Amino acid sequence: MTEIFDFFFGQYKTYSTTETTLEIIAVIFGFLSVWYSKQNKIWVFPTGMISTSIFVYLLLKWELLGDMMINGYYFIMSVYGWYIWTRKVDETHVTPISRTTPKEKKTSIYIFFATLLFVFIVYNYFDRWTSWVAYADTITTAIFFVGMWLMAKRKIENWLFWIAGNIISVPLYFYKGFTFTSFQYLGFTFIAIFGYLAWKRSLDKTQLTS
Image 1 (cartoon, rainbow, N blue to C red):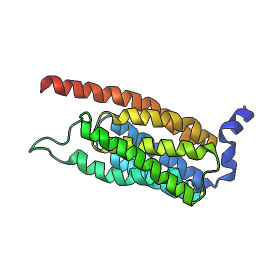
Image 2 (spheres, rainbow, N blue to C red):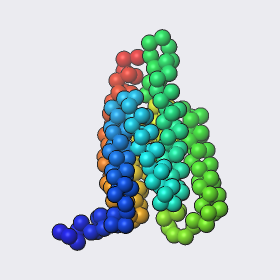
Image 3 (spheres, rainbow, N blue to C red):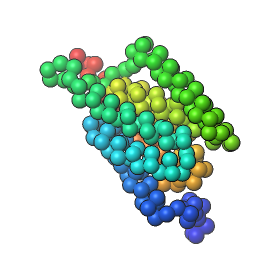
């Protein structure tokens, strides 16, 4: 039993109590954010902002630049998404769930490759190309940047990017030594699957009644 505990949580022996507590709080609010997103509730953004702001602090302290940039971007896009989700498209309706347009698909491609280039430049400047983790970070950063942009626009396809990025992040964060965060992404994967199905049902229902 001790061996199993050490395997999953042994790395926390080198962390301060404050760091561990903050990670747990960030994970809790991260779960709340994704859950509210699944429910199509505006609380996705304030809870997400609390989680990401804590992670920005921790990841900067742990010198994980790619992960820090992801969370910093999440925070900024949460502000943007909060505005989009509450913006009224007419006198009684706010921005609805919808599918991406051809133009938005092209924009998603631009965001993906622009993110790859940006992370490459940053990692090259700070000499971070020291292991395969840096390459995995680059890919997940690009995936999550697109996913967050689509979520802020209330596009159903955002869930597909979250699912892909979360699946990669589960073993990646465990390898980095952040077990709680790894478990968070495992939970995110299942919530994202159910989130996609829930949004699809809502979208199909809206299209049938329109």
